[in-house]
Image (cartoon, rainbow, N blue to C red):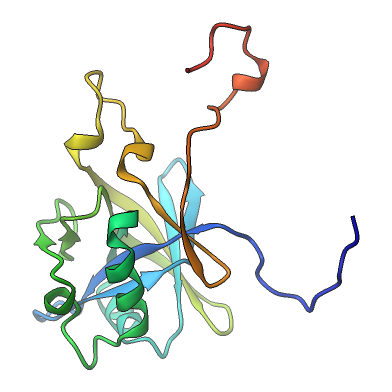
Length: 192
């Protein structure tokens, strides 16, 4: 297989396409689409988002130190894209997309009711890295839509058809392929 050498860049794909809800603490809140997000630590539970300082939402996160990562779905692809290309300086993204502000349990930023998972976060550190600033945050609470839980309380991500972003395009994740450790389990012990 022939390879081409490209200039250095971020080719780690796919990434989750999430809606991040933010607030200025004075009654104004906003939604911003983010793909620069991920897990940092298990104990304590920590995540990050990276935003450009020029983004309207950046100043809100910087001011309040709180945000909510709302996992999106294939059904929310239009709203997710729209919130990434329009500025909250100019429009009320909640009103224009028809998304519903929900009650948080641990922070003062609204959750997006239509999203299957809402991760409520409090910033612990800001790293000014260049084009983006990384907001490291501790997870304060997680809300999960009960319709994606089975009778034993297990969350089934595949049922909500999560949305991912890859090099300018949005995709669904496709079907289940295995679970952690399945490759070394004895036959008959894996999920079907």
